[in-house]
Length: 241
Image (cartoon, rainbow, N blue to C red; front, side, top):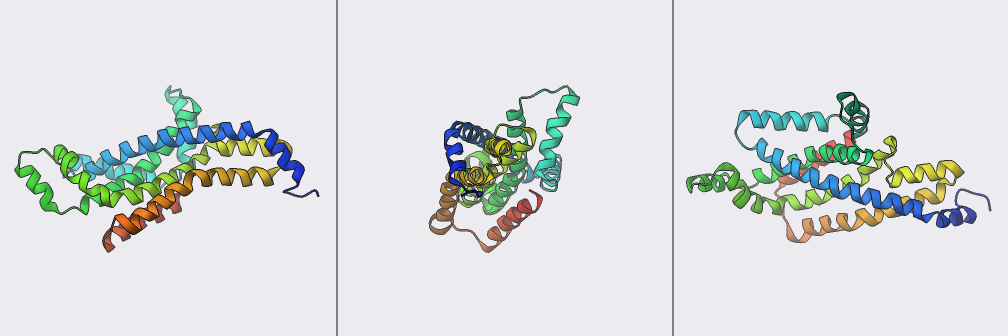
């Protein structure tokens, strides 16, 4: 049978499985590094947005608005083509890490801001009255409590981040989607290639999505206001991705 899922096409894919394995490892590496960058940026700018220091609040707002209101594809394209004109040469994989990390950092910033705002203001006032600085109060008192609110949406952000690494395909990033596109365009065996690629993304994303669902259902509780704010963040991401 000669169709999109003919057996000989599957045989060709199995014989070239190392191509997909290489792409899978690159996707996993980019995901881990991007998530580390996104968490760092998100926590820092999330604290900036609640610092009551005007310059830091404005800086956080500018970062979030610019990143959230422009597509990730355009941001990656700008980094890939714009950085060399500024004399900055980076490996393609690092461009992907920077682009995806900065992009999701803006959404994590909003999650952190919502988590911090869910903690009663009296907690911060009490910490300051005991001699803590703002940053010490955040580190030792506010953020440890806010993580109960933040962890489920942060896990969802990790899922979205993994899927968004596929944009590296447009700059030949060597990721799973790029390897899939390259392999299937050479022989036109698109059916098996995309089925296997979808399953590999599922292997990475489903455990995290299930973990987020369990945390929301059993361990962590949102107020209606928190849920509404997190939903707005996720809907905005889907609209701009």
